Image (cartoon, rainbow, N blue to C red; front, side, top):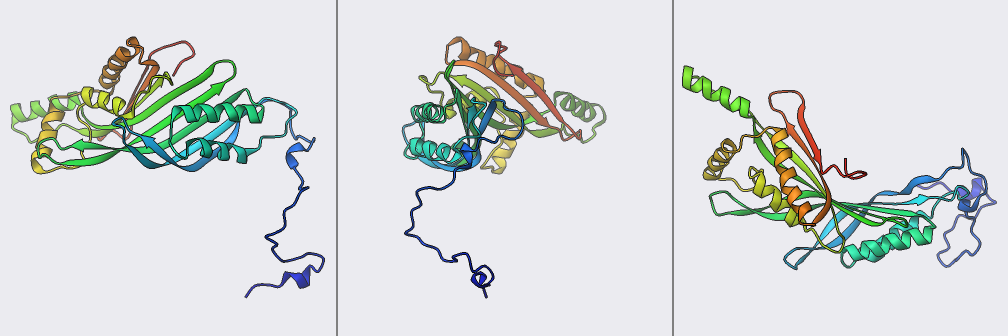
Length: 304
């Protein structure tokens, strides 16, 4: 049973008028009173925002994915109280609702900056990108989802910058542990196993918006150079193949970082990308900590 507040507050009207269209609503954004010091703000925006996006694949097909967006503009006018945040969502949704494209993001970032009177605008889209994976020996196939981030930014001074990040999950076997297990088996006939662990390579590339780097391209680069990717469909023959694959790819986290650095350096020399970073995390099964290795191209003012 609802409470009849009209009896408690007779001076108010407790009815909803759907036909009423107000014309003179108050706007606190134009309030001249600004608490605190008047300084420009680097980012003002909204996050996380759920956005359905139609993503184009390398093979020409498309797929609807659910993305989590972060949208920001710089607040450069020290006398401005804030930004109109609802416009950020409406404009981004309008530009990418039919197809997620770099051109659409560029248009959205430019308009966001212009309409908000900002020098800079930023967009970050997070989503999982499903792609097929063949089993190692059983001639089966499944789908694996790659955590993906697409970063875009616009600056009146420096133009557009775009970054693509994926998480590539693989198995790593410790070379030291492998040799110690082999020593125990051969010298003392003791049952011993090398320790291995699920590991993550977070790979980021800055690319030319006029030259697309497909998500599939980045995944294939990782698969080629670090072939012990975690498996979706596994029969016994596949599990044995995976064990052999791990045994023939004994790598410390530092090794993986250097291998991927070399591969991405070739992309850089081919002018496919402007910059890159690689962060490796081996989630240790021996220790209560992770083994970490990080490398970048080393460009001044670039990725760190």
